[in-house]
Amino acid sequence: MTPAPKIPHKAPKTFAVKSFGCQMNVYDGDRMAELMAAQGLTQADPADADLVVLNTCHIRERATEKVYSDIGRLRKHGKDPMIAVAGCVAQAEGAEIVRRAKVDVVVGPQAYHNLPDLVARAARGEAALDTDMPVDMKFGHLPARRRVPPSAFLTVQEGCDKFCTYCVVPYTRGAEVSRTFGQIVDEAKALVEAGAREITLLGQNVNAWTDGGQGLHDLIATLSGIDALARIRYTTSHPNDMTQGLIEAHRDIAKLMPFLHLPVQSGSDRILKAMNRSHSRDSYLRILDRVRAVRPDIALSGDFIVGFPGETEADFADTLSLVDAVGYAQAFSFKYSPRPGTPAATMGEQVPADVMDERLQRLQAALNRDQAAFNAASVGRRCQLLVERKGKLPGQMLGKSPWLQSVHLVTDAKVGDLVTVEITQAGPNSVSGTESAGLPIS
Ligand code: SF4
Image (cartoon, rainbow, N blue to C red; front, side, top):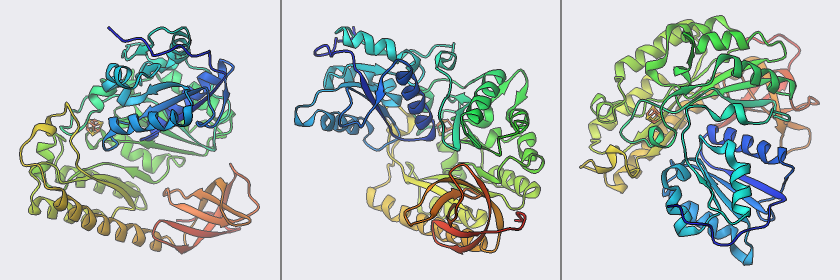
């Protein structure tokens, strides 16, 4: 039995959505905002909104506790907005959140198309919890895209069947499901009509996307035929789903950007096995060799976990040597932290916190070194820049290079323009450029 909310609220007139975590959550948050706007609600600051949607991430450290403190902050100073908890924490711990924090609405990541109905139920004082994972995906129930940034996200696939032993995604997002080819092409066209010049295709295992025997590379080839769409990216991929077709797309499809985010997590075969990654250090490196063979300038990115249970100094040395072998353009690295309900959470040999801290520092020093080297090596490159927003200085704009570097530029160009720049200066996390009359070369 789901407990009823504390007191009924009046039907909200304003709303705010706060998203935490990955790009898929950002996408989901945008779609929830569109959904509420289509109901006639006006977007407001979270401090003033009648309805606040907390779109939560279970990967955050102490994720559940942070949701409770976020709720506490919203209720400070006697304010009492209607609170909806969405996202992966809602999926994993929904009923408990209703019981403990008396929130009004709980909605899982596969059910948020029902948010308006749940809000209406909460306004009547009824219980409003929906964490179903219907086979019929939510996307057909969402309103059309209207206003989007020049670089927009498009979720094409959700869920995961890989069951890495540290990860909650297979439990919170469910099994791998692909949206249909037609649905994705329609949404991409709508995004481009609404102003997108670049689309990043999203999925927990985006390269596992499939429909009627077609793979992600077929989808990318079709999307590249949309005239006003200039750039295509995709994330996040699993090494085992890197097909030859997708690798060759990096050579054959000019609009597919030379960037690949391919998580590896560890350089040690022993740890990869304990993580149930189902690939080895060597098979991962061989995939990267094949990608570099067809697209030598590709920028590579990865994810790393240090301090997985049982990780020895020798295992960690294998991770450092893999980093040295790859030379990442950028990467994300985290300390292992146990997620309740995952097999790794109950494994013995948990690595002490101070050992993890020290290893993370060494890993990040190596990754920062390689990122700075990649940026330095791009000085003198001429490339297209997609202008995404204004910078802090007068006349300064910010955008992304094909290799996903942040580029600062003084220009008259507007947000959404593509301009040719020569990269003239490199910093550790970004580069600067000047507008250039010549054609892009890389
Ligand atoms: S591949 Fe592994 S880490 Fe990635 S979502 Fe699936 S279970 Fe989680």
